[in-house]
Amino acid sequence: MIDAYFKFVILPDEVRAIHNIKSNSRLDCIEYSNNSILEYNGLDAFTNKKGHLFLYKTEPRNFIKSQYSHKSNWSLTHSTINLTSIYYDENKSNVLGYGFPNHKRTLSNGAINPLYPFRNDAYLMQFNVELTEVDFYVIREARNSIMLHYELLLNGSYNKEIQSLKTGSKPFYYYTYNSKLDLLI
Image: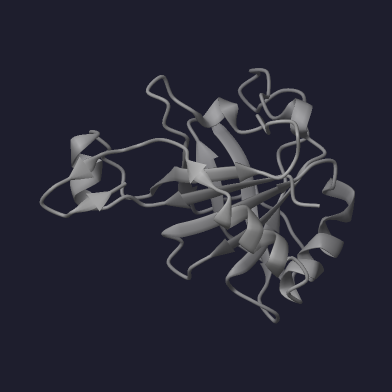
């Protein structure tokens, strides 16, 4: 049922310095995997010329409207594009969330929305409280059934599938090997 998996993290200061990444709120994709024959390219608009796929965690302002029981304390954005708000039911979990792409044909600045072809997709997310790590799952054509998928995530029904996606993941971009840290990132 889950079509793709992306792992986003805030890189260590040393790695960010090597790659001239200044923002403390930038989440870079370090690994991914696909669960379907077709490669998921709905996040291509968030990849730069160097091949880094990244998003920024931002506080949503007045552009977020939701039901009282479902909160959005964070959004995942890139440049002028809001990929998704992170919604969650605070009564059930504050580390499991859901979201979906902007479904409008154009952005508020009049530019063509690169997410429009993916407007019916749905996103599930697992994250830590600080939002320094986000496991991001894509379910194609599931926007209208997102609450069902969110409940399945909450009750553990996706655990085996998620473990399989993580086990089969591969690096999205090799950031660096730092001999001082003895880390491959």
